[in-house]
Each structure stands twice: as structure tokens, then as C-alpha cells.
Length: 240
Figure 1 (cartoon, rainbow, N blue to C red):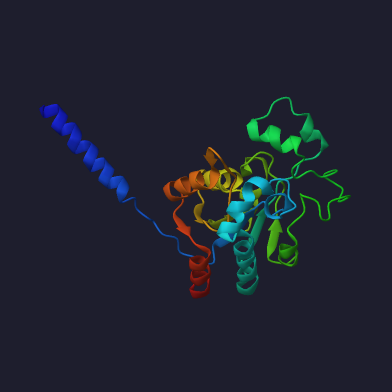
Figure 2 (figure 1 turned 90 degrees about the vertical axis):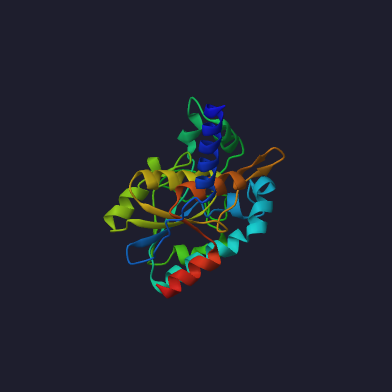
């Protein structure tokens, strides 16, 4: 009985600690950059190949406008934005093995481009930027990295570009929440960056038995230094 009582105390104590999970906070300063993952048609346009599963989440979160608000304030406040895109070329379709969603992405020709050195057929394609974002992405304060190939930035030069430009802190947003966005968060944290996430400037696939957005929110809260709403982060940027 004594051991059972002790176990109950430990469980209650531990539960209480997790109920009060600390929020380390995130201060925006000159060492802070914004990172946007996959601001592309296949995720964010009603004509994109994933709209049937992500559209409800994108619409509910007002994701398209919230991402644009980040691009807009970054331009106004001269904050550097790093865009980490997702592209697939012909040689990517001959991989000998894939994960479940990689198979799906290849099958539906998601983010397909003709060639790494060609823009033939790129304009208006699923791999292209959402039209709303083009004026911002073409701006002098935006750096487009090489493409990531699965979900995280391990296969592109995002971390290198951030470090070479002197940034150690990241405000993270983009698509999709539990895949590329979460994978970027995890890898950046593991590489010593201080990371915050804008939870309504992202969205995810919602299926009958799988809610990618809810899964991501749990991990954002547990791993990132802070989780913003778009309204909160815009206010923080203006007051920095």
C-alpha cells in the first residue's frame, strides 16, 4: 500500500508539472529571420493537388492571408525571409524506396518541375508560388534556399544560409504543419537555432482518422521556444 501511495504521488506530481509546461518565450531582435516552408500552389491554391485534404484546414486558419501578412511585415520592417521550397525533378521519381506520403506525392505529381535548371512549365504549376506571394518573394529581403526533398531541411542549404547571414533565431511558418513545417522546426532546434512557430500561418491534411494539424500543435508546443498566432507575432515585430 505504501508503494502504491508513493506511485500515486509521483504520477500526480508529474502530471502537474506537464500541466504547467513552461513557455520559454521568444524575443524578436536583429538576429531573427522568418522561415516559410512550401508557400506553393499544390498546398495553398484550390487548384493544388492536395486541396481536397488540406483545404479545410487552410481555410479555417486563414493560412493564405496569414502567410502573406508575414511576407508583408517582413518587407516593411526589412526582416530577412528564407523560403524553403519543395521540388521534385524527373530523377526524384526513380527512387528505389519511399515513405507512405512520398509515394502519394510522386503519384499525384506534387511539386513537379521539368528540370533543376529549367523553368519550362513552372509558371502557374503546382510547384510555383501562390500568386499573392510573388511580389514579396521577388523582393531583396527574401532568400530562396535549395529545395528540401522529403520534409526537413537536412537535404537543403537552409541552415547554412541562416548561419552565413548571421541568424540564430527563427520565426517559422508555412506548409504543411505536421510534415515540412514540423520537420524544419525539429531540425533547426537540433542545430542550435532558437525557434518559434506561427500556428495559424500553417495548416495540414485532415482525414477521417488522421488530423495532421492537431498532431503538429502538440509538438509545436512541446518543442518550440514559443508558439505565436499571426496577430501576436505581427504585434511583437512592430514593437521590437
